[in-house]
Length: 290
Image (cartoon, rainbow, N blue to C red; front, side):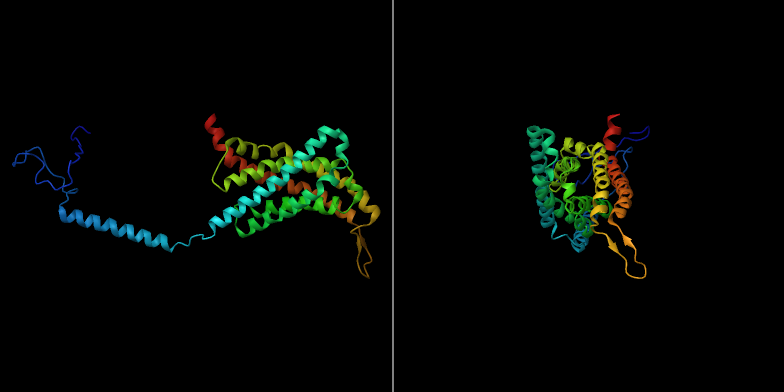
């Protein structure tokens, strides 16, 4: 409504064409039709026909867009993958926690012999995360997935799995425990995401718990590397000599010293990735709360 006009929308009781707007045949002087909006029966039919053609064209365009025929299969695969990993790491976490309460500090020194088989299974299966990211099954960036999986498996299969002296170290307990705590929240989050369910508490934990646990896990891995350097230096395992005329022996322990630096670079890559994810999932909510 303005100072010069009043717009009124009148709804008809029955869908039909009116012969006139007012009861009297003579049009009032103050009443004038807006011919820009004027429609007669033929105009209305043309408008309906145009809308129908637009709808048909839209359907044709949508039919040309390739649909992901394997969407449900892919979703089922990802759900089962995350479920299996969740069950595996839950078994590890519960087993280690129960043994810690029963045996106390003594459980630190035989962690590898009681947990390693399940950890081998879970971490070997984790190679699928690299493949999932590579082929586009998930939106996770390829580099952070590669860094985490290869980094953990290097510690597990190369350092701990190939040096018996390392398997009875207390640091193994902390490595496995930190890994399992992170994963018992990460995998359920992704599992529920596959079926479009979001649990706000789980989302908050998933994007918050890594803040203390990732540095602690990296610290435990670094300690294991430091402890492994003299072990591999003494045994000479994985060391090799270059052929003549170089005749230089490359010690694996030297590589471990370099890997210590790589470890913290990888930690930075994952920290940056997880921080961006946390801002994406929790940042907007925090601003609203303020």
